Image (cartoon, rainbow, N blue to C red; front, side, top):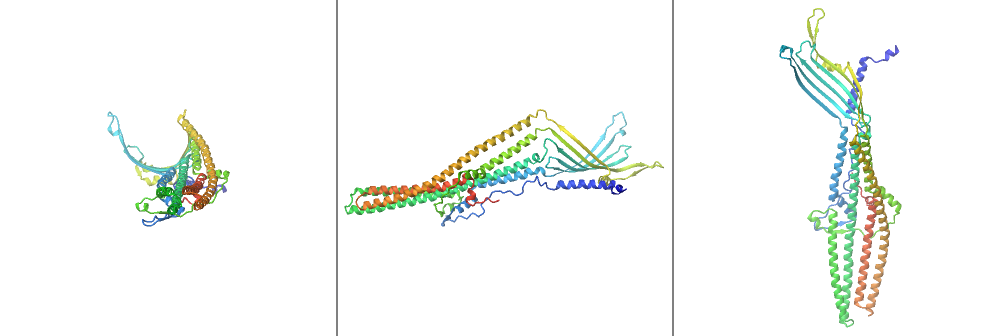
Length: 544
């Protein structure tokens, strides 16, 4: 008796079944968390600080490196084009997630069927049947690869055939069906592969943007220091010209006093003229280099091209002596190319898994649970009088039977399809295997290339600072030598030609020191690029 008291009634069980089907329908409409594409992408854009405006014509642009970075990264056209590519990859991720969008299907139809009879028989034996139907269903793909559908339909049938007890007749049904692949197409790894591959493609594009941003920053560095260098060349040439001019004036005075022969004057004048030409060439080179920097920072308007650029960064730099093993390890972890290669290998391995899964036979399990209902105008004979009477019924009665779960029906099944030969899938698998192996070999080659670049960059730093120190010493000695030669000239122990030659030696030493300092600045940038840390070293953040 206790057992009977807690056993649910048949109607209670039917209500629970209907409630369960309704819950499944609502869950199909809910978002599938594990399959949705991310709504937010860390899409690279301009640096965090706003790019300053370039002064209008008549002013000047005081340019330090951070200002140059901000201008270049916000105005660079190549980066602007890459931003569109990144937006496309984001949309591809969003589109790939569309496989988990539920689909709502609806249909309606009307028909008339006419039954023909042979001409030998009375035409009254023929009859017609009219029908109309409507159906709606909701379909959803699950991460396991299963497809779930919940559908309902309502149909009306009317006929003039005699002897039909229910006319017109209404039929209704509600069915929940599930079809789950068990071999080919089974599991979240295969089902969500398109979303994962699109996400990885987006990550590769993001690393590619970072690589391009690093190259832009490196270009700014190199152009900036080249401009600083060409302007300091002007200073060296001006100093050299001033020395030659002073020597010419002294020589003219001494020739007037008959302390030197007139031939000394010709040599001094020729040297002044040559150094004036050198100065003109240096100024022209500086103007060209200023335009190079303007182009890199994104100058477009004519008024901006006319704005003079004044650099405000000192050329001197502190020595950097990195440890080679740590530098190589950092590069292999931080270089965008290496990250892109790793993502490409991961994507190729996933594609290989999907291709391997496609080799399996197709074995699907299916199950359905539903409820049906029927109603209509039913012709009944009275048990006592035999008189025919009609009991009316409509669509609402058929639907009520479905809702009450009066007539359940179910089915389960398995279907198997074995492709014979399956050459297409085998060829696709071989291609995916080759892609994985090819990318693996490419990764090894990339590691070699990165290691070589880092080793070269480290040597460049070591040799560069040594070159700077040697050049500083050479400049100091050349200056001392010039002062000594000028003293000898004053004492009559030297000639103007010899002094001019020593002046040239000083200018050569100063230019060599300048080239060494510029080369070291570029070596610092090249090292940061080789290790993949240039943006962090310059405190540049690629913001979402």
